[in-house]
Image 1 (cartoon, rainbow, N blue to C red):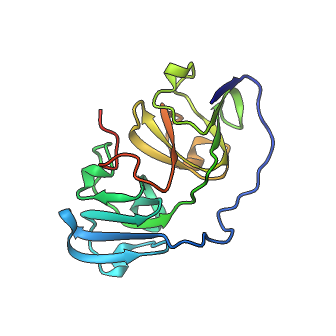
Image 2: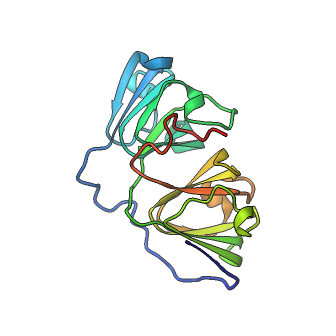
Length: 211
């Protein structure tokens, strides 16, 4: 369900990222080489640097339960990559941006039965507003909203936004909370052209969008 509003939305929402963890165990297994070969490291909590775990690089991944987000750099920095339940035999199966094949840190993401996201045209929750409820949007343009997204509010669930239509390009995580400026979600420009829900399932057999 999509709604388009033209007035700012200013209600504040409390962050819950540090609330008690779910009862089930989240687990991801990273391998040094492609096709699940080489040194193996199992993670059930956030890891700021896989090198400290004895894994010099990440060539393939199995997400046994999730979802997770992996990062290009140590300490959750750099480009982001969403990992949902399934197998990722090589780097091209967890990204389609074709700019980076390096992963150095991981942390779990929260799952939710309900999803609601507000996107705003300008910083500080100003300008045109798009509301997305329990739906995925492969193209913002198709629904009458431009590609400029400068602030956001994730009211329920965890979302991932993409720079281009069809869930392509750089990925940006939106967890429950407020994002007054595009820098808050790690972007350098206010551009998002598609967005989808992050769920504890493998939404595509290869783990990334194919077109």
